[in-house]
Length: 459
Ligand code: NAP
Image (cartoon, rainbow, N blue to C red; front, side):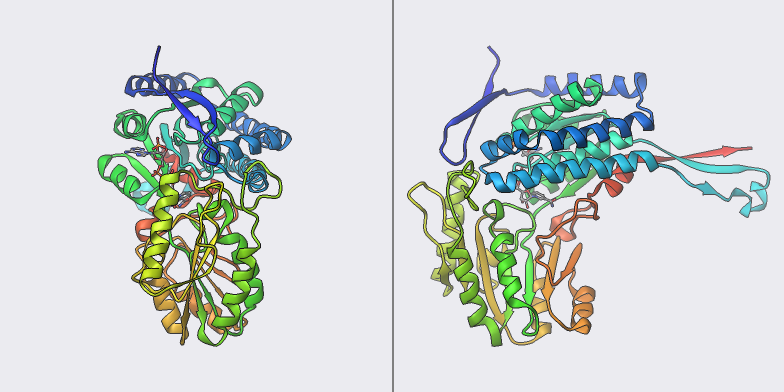
């Protein structure tokens, strides 16, 4: 019998199911099938758009089923999992729009004497077989952010989901193939460890592009390992949020209650570092602490639950260690900081945090928000920018001049005003600077990455 991976619930360790532990030979087979499909069965634009339209429709109809799968395998509270499934349907809609409008451009060749009498234009052609490697934290929507644009671009995909969350990907592939008309060769899911299956995809000569979402260490090692491939990286962050004294700080506190703790902080743009003006720091921290204390923590399948378990007990213990390190260095716990009887770490608010603490300088990827007071705006912006990450940042202020100054000086892939840095629309260009990555996702941007420009000259 071939090897299997047993997937267990991060919340109560119950067995959810098994998937095959596939090998490099399985990757070879899948890539060969995908390559053959690209040449033998290219998808015309109308078909790509039709498949994506159906996918949006079926995902909407089957939203609850997909939400249940996400909640079980990722311990994402079912309420949040429903939102993810809904967003994934929207991502397919935006990908369908790209399929309908994918086009090249006219190049005015007669702008030089030797081009007179010639007609020039570009086509956008599929880049080739895509290797997609996905993280555990949005096991459906972040997979759709890779698969949807790939279908729009006409590229077959070999997809490796995170080992903890393979079932969303497997259900998605079945739906696309059985219910939406996608030829089976255009989406093959390979399950197995990152070291085996992931590396085999990265190394494969017939994979034209790797689209990777996950941790910076793995992401940059893939970039180094595949210098001749196009490699798109969506990586980590420690998102900052600045709160000016004239900003609507009550609204900021209410939003951070969700933005810092949704899926137990396991979002790449989870609000992590809050810089609040000293004049309102005490009031703001007390208000946010009350919000955090009110969060309902427990079973992800319970409709009332707002925060559940981290992806593993090892991750929980790491985050607890970082909280202890911060308090030993002088920070105080304003809310949470304890592990419940069911093993779940309570959402934690750390006050008097400072830059040297891991909860500020690193990506926590857990239910922890760290608050620090500042005196001047320039100081706050310098603190926010003092990071190796650069995905999204935000500021709350009522002053348009301050807002525009922050937009200009916050050095991130996205800057939000009077909103948390955790807010994201699926059609926006989404991606980071520095260690946060090297690309932008969002169907319109991903489709460009997944196609090549072919120049045509008619003489
Ligand atoms: P991860 O440990 O890096 O894993 C991501 C994927 O890479 C998984 O499928 C994993 O497989 C695979 N992998 C591991 N080692 C590999 C290797 N040597 N070669 C190829 N693939 C390999 O990340 P994660 O814990 O799932 O996700 C958390 C991270 O993702 C955080 O840093 C978060 O900020 C980031 N993230 C970024 C974005 C964004 O859009 N910027 C969005 C979501 C998450 P296994 O599961 O089998 O190990």
